[in-house]
Length: 220
Image (cartoon, rainbow, N blue to C red; front, side, top):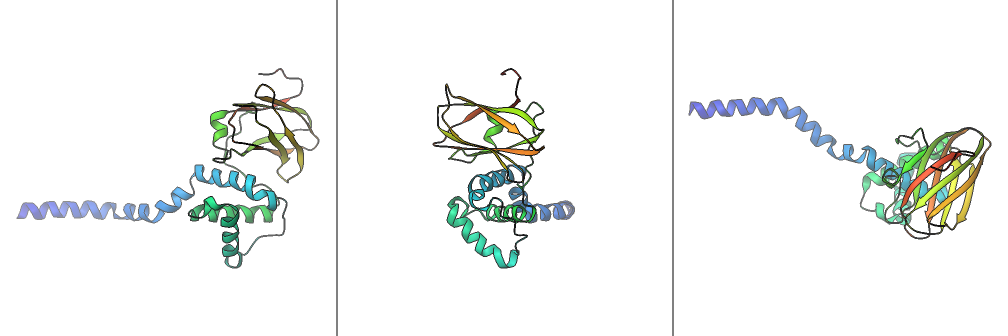
């Protein structure tokens, strides 16, 4: 009997020691998952390829969460049905909309930008929507000058390509047909700043490589 009591005492002490940690895990398990890097990147890509069609450059100041969240939530579900059962996604899309309207800029993405400005298909996949394969990629700071966008794809699929500044100034807006699964698009940058690449394919297609190359550099 005393042995059982001793075991119970040890177990109780062990439980008491870990109870605060267990409580924190239970309390934050939902939000931690919702706010991890992968889903939030997903939210930004969704917003900037789906919602931005209507809300880009809407700079009317911050929304009131209490007054507008329910209206915005219904609007989000109506125009992006995949968010219907994802409360975390609804809230993140609302937060991104708030930022966009208040800052009049794209929401910053927590994605490393390669110094070479060359992205592999594996990296690009994290910045695309499923199943449509719309892409939204931060390409970092570009100085004034001549550049070209190089694209390599799985198939010859007609695509709409955008390159724009963080303040929504459109530099490239073309609908193009690739040749031999690749595209080279000339770009003239007149204002220094952060830029973003966006692509809408006519049907889902995987991009195997994206590069922003200074004019005059050899193809890689």
